[in-house]
Length: 177
Image 1 (tube, rainbow, N blue to C red):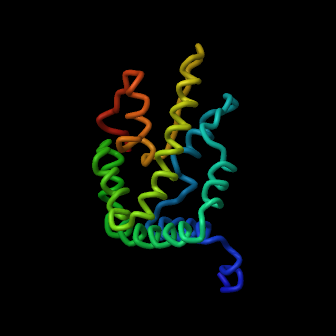
Image 2: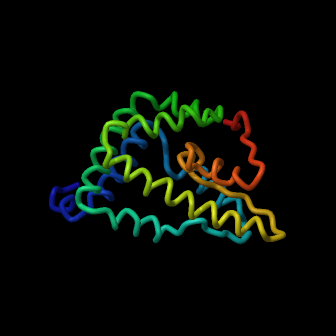
Image 3: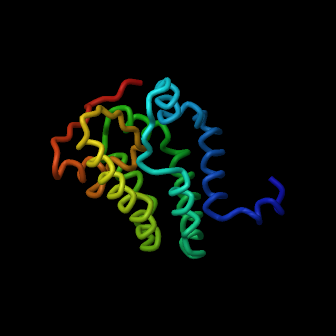
């Protein structure tokens, strides 16, 4: 991408593009993501968003300059770790090893208080909103199939912990490959 175009991008967007490019280099195609898979399988069934794409963009766009700088640093560090550990990460996901996934997420930020603050925004605060929305859905007589990224399921403020405060929550021991 020409430097003039790069200069016009917000740092968070540039970091996201770099991460997607790295994932594609590793043979991971975002078009094969579980979210898109299940959306295509819905075949006319109603889709209820826990969080809109606009809300995600507003969150990232609302970062201060310093937070965006931290986000870029975290992404670069995360990309290095991702490249080295991609098979372990996939294995942790496929075997349901929540602790490994949590450790992976936290390892890249452990040396930065600013990044830990960003992770609260990226995960904890969003998880609380998603959990509240899921609780509302569970009050209806309908059945819902919920898809979220693995990072939203782990940790003391992950969806499983939050929902587990008022509900019986079970984790599958292994996800099918």
